Length: 152
Image 1: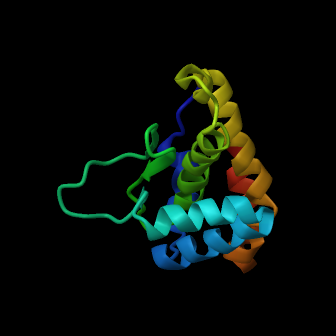
Image 2 (image 1 turned 120 degrees about the horizontal axis):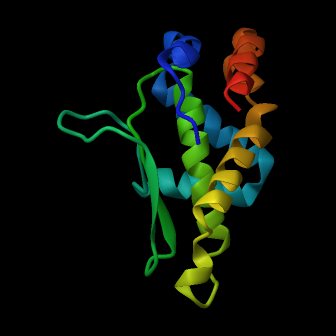
Image 3 (image 1 turned 45 degrees about the horizontal axis):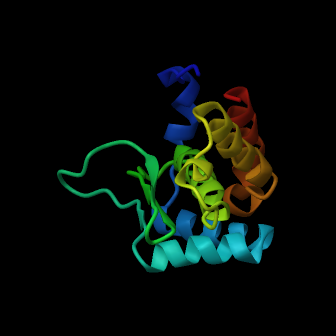
């Protein structure tokens, strides 16, 4: 997997979006896709299973982990108020969806896909919700899609 250069991320990082607005719009977007997925996102938000706010001394990065006994994923991210946040949250939430849908499997080994499959799942969610991103980016949608797809 190649990492994105600062030049490639440029447009996404230049364009600003209010983090609360983004989270609210994503919640609506996920509900439009599927009530079950929307409920998962809302549940995670309302019960602090998503940590996206920037705080002093909070480690950087974005990741997802799964709490097997609780049968719920946890999403960790530091959103910076730019368009790239959409890609980060959507990608990590793609991992959350995969684990959530596999939560009732008998063996822990069945819950987690191999790294390659897990990344395909997360990228698929990113691409699947891309057509709904117009709700979030309105007049910048075409620019956003161009930059987003240039990284795929």
